[in-house]
Image 1 (cartoon, one colour):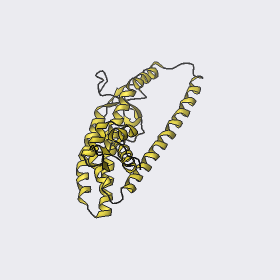
Image 2 (image 1 turned 180 degrees about the vertical axis):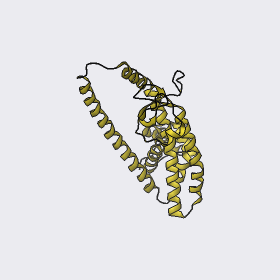
Image 3 (image 1 turned 45 degrees about the vertical axis):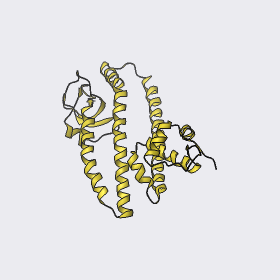
Image 4 (image 1 turned 90 degrees about the vertical axis):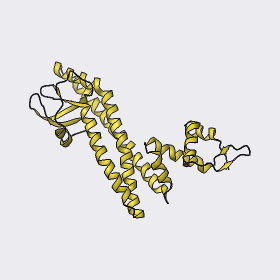
Length: 245
C-alpha cells in the first residue's frame, strides 16, 4: 500500500503543507505511520479522508463541525447528503445560467428591432452594471454565512433524531436567529432599488424590504419618490452618497 509524506499528500490535495500539519494538530487527519526518521506517513485511506476534509472546507464548514461530523458513527451518510446537495445546487446553477443566456439572446434579437432607447433606461442600466460586482460580492458574503449556519442546524437536527440529544439544536437556534437578523440588516444597509416608473434610486423601510415578494434581482416595493408599487431592480447602495433616500 502506498505511503505519502506530508508534502506529497498536500500536493495531491492542492493545499499547503501547513494546512496538512494544522489538520494533524487538530486531530482530524492523523498519519497512519511514522518513518524510521520520524516523518509522518499517510495511507490511501488518509488521502481519501483528506479529500473529504478539503471538500467540506470548500463548503465553508468550520473545522470544529468537520471534527464532529467525522466522529459520527456513520459520517459517510451525512457527507453523502452534503455532496448530493452540492451536486444539485451546481446543476441548478448551470440550468439557470443556460436559461439566462437564452433570455439574453432573445433580448438582444428583440432590441435590434427597437429604434431607440430612453435616456432613463440607459441610466438605469449604467447604475445596474456599475453596481453588479459589488452586489455579487455582497450576495456571496450572505450566502457563505448562511451555509455554515444551515449545516450546523442540520447536524444538530440529525444529532437530536439519531442520538436523542436536543440541546445542540436549541443552542444553534438561539445563535442562528440573532445572526440571521444581523445578516438581513447588513444586506439591507448595502442595497437600494431603482423604480421602473420614475427611475429614481431609493431605499425603503427595513420592514418593507424584509416582507416584500422578491426575485433574485428585484423586489416588490413602493417607491418613496413617486409612490409607484411594483417590482424594483436591486442595486448596490452601500457607498452611494448621491442616491436619494
